[in-house]
Image (tube, one colour):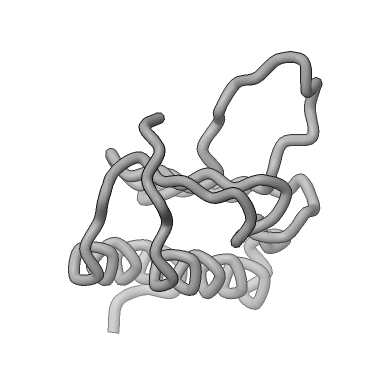
Length: 105
């Protein structure tokens, strides 16, 4: 994955998605350091993998179509994303992911 800095609006949006997953009893919040995973037909999200550190495989913690975000141990630390993304584009990604959890309004 090419390294790009992760803007605050992405961090906040991913945190909200993790909180909604937990709030709606769909699993533990994968943004926390708890080895949980969540996946549906729209996106996937997983906590940091504490597997063998000698094998360095970058598995994204968040994946939505061609957009991926990885972090180190917990959301907000050592983050990188697969490509640059505008606030408007992330807003659409966020809405799509949120709707997949709670349904459209």
